[in-house]
Length: 71
Image (cartoon, rainbow, N blue to C red; front, side, top):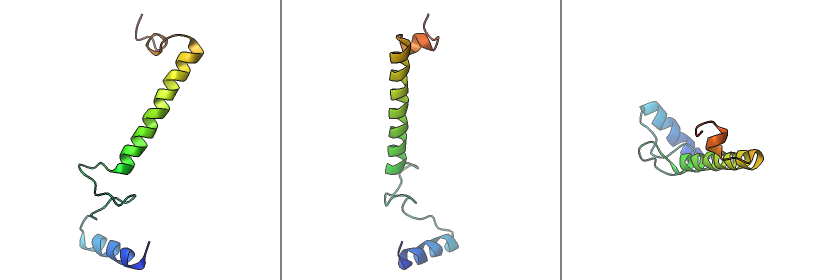
């Protein structure tokens, strides 16, 4: 972080104005979403999908039957 960006950040926080970009990226968030949030959400979705595949491979049954959602 450069000194000019640090000065701008401190000016923004002192004046009560919200910064124009996200804290983690240079994207301007729309409706609270940013590219970083979407990337993290996608990664967690991939981990969850892999976990479902692992459960099905180990139990030799579908996830819905394993979870007791389908008789």
